[in-house]
Length: 477
Ligand SMILES: [Zn+2]
Image (cartoon, rainbow, N blue to C red; front, top):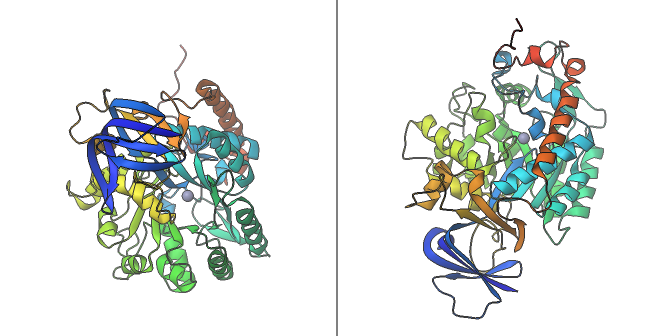
């Protein structure tokens, strides 16, 4: 089946980067892009006329926790613990564990959100949900890298101040073995749209042995690894105390820092003002190693924290890809925040440009995943494509469609999404999904979670005590 798409603007790939092709044509043959250019004169089975549309490659989120993200909404915003340097990991994250059933509902909700924002490839990091997530992703048709996280222990706070670690006697080795079995079983499933790789959860909850064995298994299986590191001041200090190294240096020490590795967040490195650790060679190490950074600016930005800085990492030669992490699972929003916070961090409007963040969300993500057939509209690439309206309040007037996409578009402007040439979003909606029902189901799941808060909080507080509503409740006369 050959489909010719004729669009007003095409973001096409040429000479190693994106190019703006006005009045362009793209020939899709089955699951791949067969041809890109001004005018196709050859045969095709059907033509898709898109005279007021922008055609872009599908966006890639390299770091997400789809299987609980909407359930933290309406609770974690506007909150932060100064004793944890505003990180929500130690006091709040432990409150958001839910049942596998509710987590899979959350994953479905999140994947629908992603498709609505033009995301065609997701890297999903979870602990107990991996098997179910494979099915949820396959049913919706999104391209998914499913990463079952494992670790040697967990963190907790007994008093809202100290962060302590509780270690499991087996060091997490059996969990690594289960993850290896998962990867062996699922990598390449569902016509290659489901992939899998290894995910030691966090740098401070894994023993050096678990990390070294992960590096060896990843090399043996020839797969990627993703780990959270440099995500909190507390973690930076913990690794420095334990090993006399920065988190990035420690990743290098255990043999993980190479082109297989995606470092989740990696914003607390030597030189970040909040860790007060001058000098160091973290950026140089990152760039020289070929490791990739999953930059998720919004989840940190809403806590008053940012990378220092996204433009500086790019300039150092680090491959920075984007991740949506938690809610909203919206890459248009994430690109906008990456551009805004990048400019604010450097005090320079000319950096963290629309081109930079769009490249991070496409080619950067593809490089992080080791895929030269994703994130680009080029012959031979997968037909993961997104059509965006230009005749909308968000997108008109258009002179530079990439700027409009990054600074002004909303999910409502995303009209059609293809993955492997198959329609997974049509007229702005995911076929077969009742969004209102999905929202109601997620509301009920969140209410079940909030009812557990008191039992899980170190101080036995209610949700309203931990996170007071934005205004006092109405007072009846
Ligand atoms: Zn994460």
